[in-house]
Length: 435
Ligand code: NDP
Ligand code: HSE
Image (cartoon, rainbow, N blue to C red; front, side):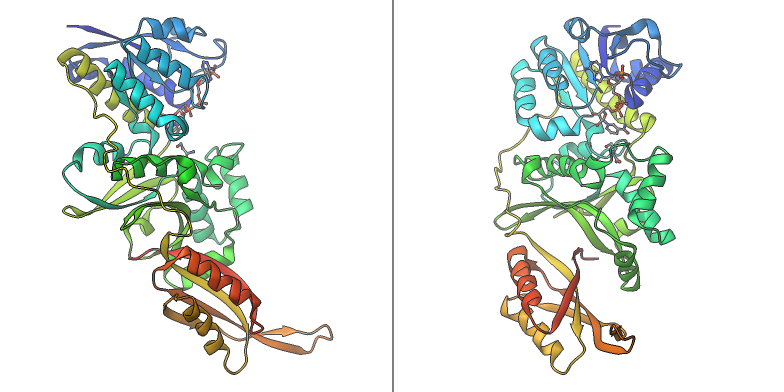
């Protein structure tokens, strides 16, 4: 049986589990790949750093380039842009296939990497880059290659789903849950990429590119994180029959692709509403297949290593038997729509003076901008006390749910509401997904 030489770059959370499973599952992996997967070495920054005890420390090196030079498959699990990008390009130049879990790198430099892999006639695999163990890249690239996808909606960041879920089930505030998530090791010490939606945006760009056979860059994804979500937003959502989730959404519209990441009201009856804790899920709508859902662990050493190893087996079997991974397909070349052009349903909570005609005034402003209202709810009257402690102005809260409207029209509506004498303030504006 042929020997396929494997170089592992990185031996952290994921890399250490890849090294462990390559050893523990050697017989099965060999049978499936049709070749011995021989781990030649593991590149790290610090050879003396503590590691999972399953890692053979004699394989550790700080000389990544020498390792790449003698490899048939390079597994990049260092993360970050550089030197990961240069090492991957180096691997292609040496005729090695690459397996990576690096969504930040793919979202920023995907086209360069796909082209280099195709030029070198080797594979570039990245199942682990989106939703960890969940085989959604394979699903889009291969299982759904015969269908026309209309939408991809995902909970693709476990940290933010854990935070929103804790806020929902325990009534806690964002800062308190984040601190607890960091203490438990669910959230990174620097949680920026997760809570500000950047990690989800990188994954959204990858999903949108695959689903619509067009290039979608990370900076074309309109991103809003979850820092501004309060327990009162969550309570209002619960009362109305929704949960708030950070949703990565990629939709095919008549004039192009809409790609957004942001807090979204998901109806309780929607399959994504039942995704709890740090779990990930991606719902795909396709014309023939209808709705599909992919669900599972989106992070963690062993789950992510599972996805990496499936790619390694595929790349190894191509080395042995010929063939190659699907190439980047961008034939549709659809434009990515601006935020203003994007279309969604919204829920707007407006604090208004409780006076005659206020409902007409508010609904009239929506109508002036062509934003159609599907429902209005009014909560109990709240009396703002004056400085003297006596009852002052009566204020009530109107929750207006719209039909699909362009973001441009919604913005114009909000601006006019803010200028209206009848409006005391806009409490919240949030996207709403259909059931
Ligand atoms: P870690 O930070 O735990 O590990 C990174 C590893 O890379 C470490 O072993 C580190 O060496 C090594 N490394 C970093 N820079 C260099 C360098 N310049 N030269 C040599 N070695 C280097 O990362 P993770 O395992 O968490 O993530 C790896 C990749 O997988 C990332 O792209 C991430 O986005 C992706 N991913 C991670 C998931 C997760 O759950 N963690 C889930 C899905 C994808 P040393 O140990 O010496 O510091
Ligand atoms: N930080 C990511 C998450 C895991 O919380 O889902 C890696 O993609």
